[in-house]
Structures are given as C-alpha cells and as structure tokens.
Length: 79
Image (cartoon, rainbow, N blue to C red):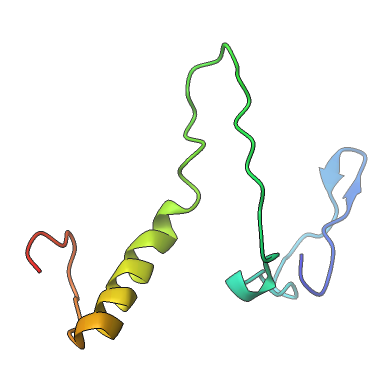
C-alpha cells in the first residue's frame, strides 16, 4: 500500500480502519507487469478480468483524441 502497510497479527488484519491509507493509483504501478497463466484442473476463475474496467475509458479517450468527439454511453455500437 502506498504510504503505509497493512499488517497482520495472529492471522488477522491489524488496522481497524483504512481511512489513513492512500489507495494505489495507476501511476504507482511498475512500467511492466508479467502475467503468468498457470495450468490448473480447477474451473476458470477469470484471469483476464482485472484490466477490464480500465479498457472502456482508455478506448473512449483514444477515440476522443482521434476524432475530437466525446462518447458518453456504452456500448459503442455506432461510431
């Protein structure tokens, strides 16, 4: 965690409140992240889901820079 750490004691999270913790931001991420998909006999659990929320804003911002038009609704069925 940025500007602090979540500590564990006796198998439990020690801090009772996280209002003093600054959440991590995209700018805090490393320049590259290696993703390893591990073969397993378990049912699929969505290894590709974490980046999904950031995709729509990235796409519409790229479209805005390209066309100058703001897209305010999803899905982008007509451009």
